[in-house]
Length: 267
Image (cartoon, rainbow, N blue to C red; front, top):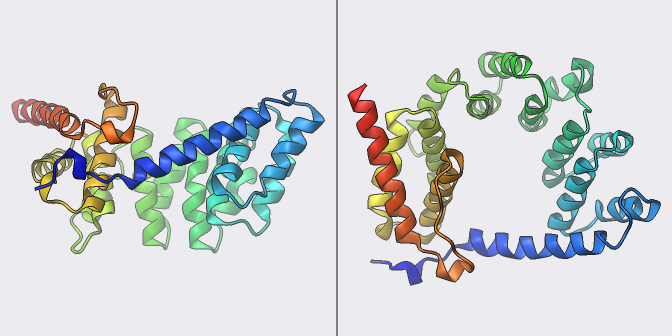
């Protein structure tokens, strides 16, 4: 049986290292006057960094600049041969700067012949009016020829507080030989939609967490933390990953899950 000291959390280690890299990058950026030529050149240069954390952070800073003059630069990068790490932050930055105001701005991506482009473009509805976003995602969920795109659209609908994708989420959840990473993610989404299957799965996995592999325990922990964040539940303070109060977090999650299941049973 594992205790907390045996809990190896590579995700936390990675995030800690990535955070330090991002902090260092932002410290360098702060030495320039925001919006100045030197500031812009610094960001442009680091968009080509071989370090994906630096590259993504540079794109995110551009997105937060509020300056629509960056749109041509970002769209040019999007149209170029970019890697998967760059696509999502580019779409988000363009969306934050108001680059998806009309269907002409984004139809090219949603209707691409490349399945992977269509999957990644499902981030775009987040930057559209809710009703327009719902129409796009429901249409993709019902009519796209790719099952991956349809399933992704069903997941994105949860982020818009819509249960329109619930049947497809349940179908995917019950697939045999489902990877644990996907199973826990789907359980989280079902929990957000207040479906008993999500509550029950997370509750069961937490109860048997000492017997899980380190990798699966990490994935379960990630799903539980997402649940805490979504529901506004308080996580115990922790300054270092080594001090992570894992069992306390799991116990708080269990208490909450049990309370929710009891409330559903009374309805």
